[in-house]
Length: 308
Ligand code: AMP
Image (tube, rainbow, N blue to C red; front, side):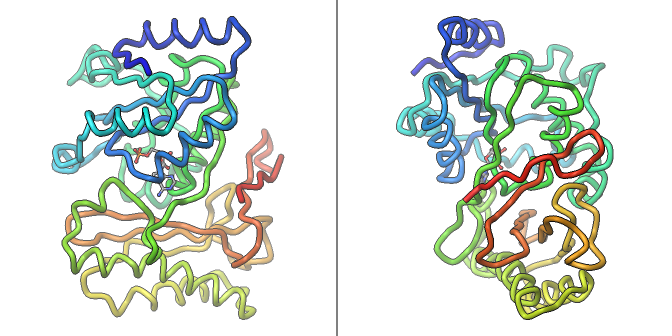
C-alpha cells in the first residue's frame, strides 16, 4: 500500500492505473476510521481494480472551531485499517496541499443549491459548500472513477450526486448501507466523545427512525404524524436535544405531506447528545428494498439503485 501526500503523486498513480485499463475506486474520509468506513473500502475493493482512500479533515466544512479541534485523529491506526481493508493507495494531503491560501479560504468554492439548503445545511451554515468543494477537488485529483459514500450522511450523498451530475463529472457515485452497533447506533467517528450515559441515550435516534417506520407500516400516511411519532420517541430522553426529525422526499429532501405522494421517502433525524451532534436516517418502509433516487436534469427519478 502506498501513502501519498501530494495531489500530483495521487493523480499520477491513478492515471497510470487507468492507462492499463484498471478501474479506480475512491473512498473519501476524514480518518478516525471505523467499520462504516471499512465497509466502503470493502465495497470498492470488490468492484474496482485500484482502491484509493483519502484521509483529510477538511477545515472548510467545519463551522465550529471547537468541533474541528476535537475531531479525532488516528492516522497511524487508520493506515493499518486501510491496509487491512485492502486499499492500494492512501492519499493524506496536508491542509496547505489542498488549500494553499489557508487560512484564507480558496477563491473558488462549490455550492449545490436546493439539496444543501435544509436540515444539516440549515443547522450548519456553509457546511455543504465545504463538503462540495473538497469532494470536487478530490474528484479532480482522482480522475474518472467510482466514488463510495455512506448513506449515513444521506444529505451529503444527495449533495455529492447532484454536484457530480450538474458538473458532468466523470464519477460514478455509489451509496453504501449504514453500518450500526448492535443496539442500533450508527457508527460515527464522533461517538468516541460520548460519555457512557450519553452513549446509552444516543440509541433514541435509531429508535425514532424505527418509530417513524412503525407508524408508516401501521398505515399512517401523514408526514406530519410520522414526524410526531419520531419526536415522541426522543422526547423522554433528557440527554438528547432534538434538532429535527422529518420525513422527506429522498430526491429533493423536501418534507412530504403525504407518504404516498413521492417515489421514495427518507426519514432523517439529527440531535445534540452531550458535546456531539449526531445524525441518522433510514428508508421509510421497514423490510422494503432500501432505495436511493438519483436526480436527472428535471429533478425526476432517473434510476433507483438497490443498496441491499
Ligand atoms: P467521514 O470520515 O465521517 O467523513 O465519513 C467518510 C465516509 O464514510 C462518508 O461517505 C460517510 O457517509 C461514511 N460513513 C460514516 N459512517 C458510516 C456508517 N456508520 N456506515 C456507513 N458509512 C459510513
